Amino acid sequence: MEGLTASYIFDHLAPKFIEDNPGFPCRVNAVVSIDILGEGGGSWTFDLTDNPRVYRGLADDAKCTLTVSASDFYALLAGGSLSDCLEAFKQKRINFRGHLPTALRLERLLVSLAKDPAIAEHSRI
Image 1: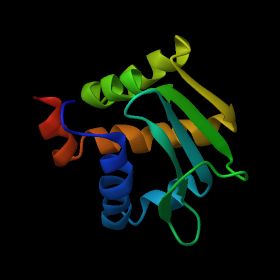
Image 2: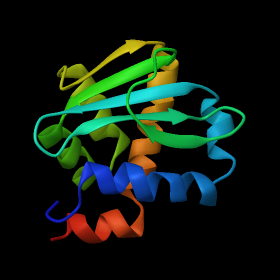
Image 3: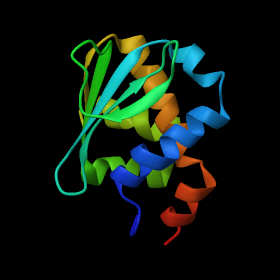
Image 4: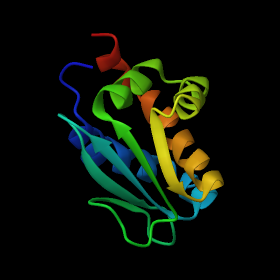
């Protein structure tokens, strides 16, 4: 996904997605973190409770934390399907600690982001 970075996705596209889909945070209703390892990665937290926001860094009080390599993260975004994410879980390419149902809800956010036109456009490059 040339030209599209995790920083751009989580600093710009994810907050816009949350703003444009106000019902989504209610379905998660938790603080969740994602840690993308390697070049092009970083750490972000989604506070999807009363005042939804996305910020850099991992939260100590996250209900769950997903950890994925940068290459797997970008491949999952390019695939953009829930079955791709579930398969990555089975293969231990996505790891999590914390509450599994919350991790699955965060996974739905990532799939929804992958379908965002700005991301889909880059995945065709």
